[in-house]
Length: 217
Image 1: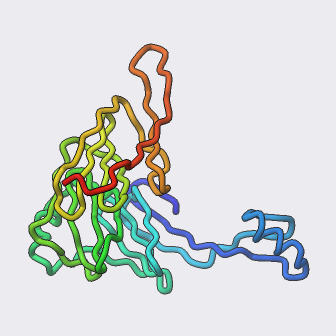
Image 2 (image 1 turned 90 degrees about the vertical axis):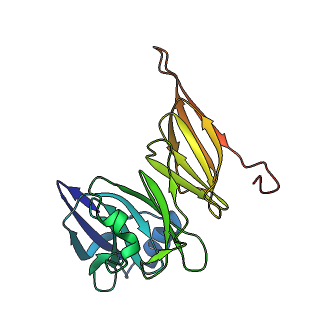
Image 3 (image 1 turned 120 degrees about the horizontal axis):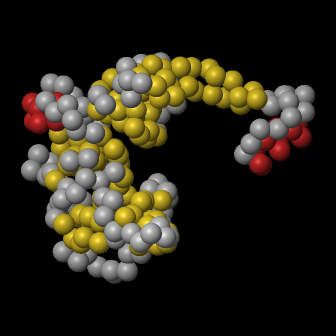
């Protein structure tokens, strides 16, 4: 995708392979890259009149986090629509906010999605309607990224990490880290980079490991 000021253009590409060179095609697949005679061809484009901040892959669609909220892109037609159902009055608390930023989306269970904003998190179903009306998390800090590791969701603030249980919305732990940044939030491991506050600005890469055999709540 290409993000410009107040707009986002999503490009869909497919590999254009030289069919006369079967070895080239095999090399393209095995190496996962472009080889001589091969190129990428843009086959579709989609325009969103908002600046995007995140991109999430669903089964057959894309979900784009942007200043307008979470937008769903149909890859077949490249049409867009809001993830949230505008007719659902229980979502008025988010529809009326202009300064709330969508950051992450996670598929949890029973067709429900956990939507994480920089202020709070809540559930919606596959139709974009509020699910579990009494469930909501308000973050202590201002997280910039999230990691979902059932049954927990981790919210990464620059100074600490909040750990919540996704079934009860109860806070489980707060990990004080100092100046930290999440690394590869979509990977299985929870890795972070911590920068020393000293003048040396040295950095350490740490891994958080779930060692509890049972639910601590």
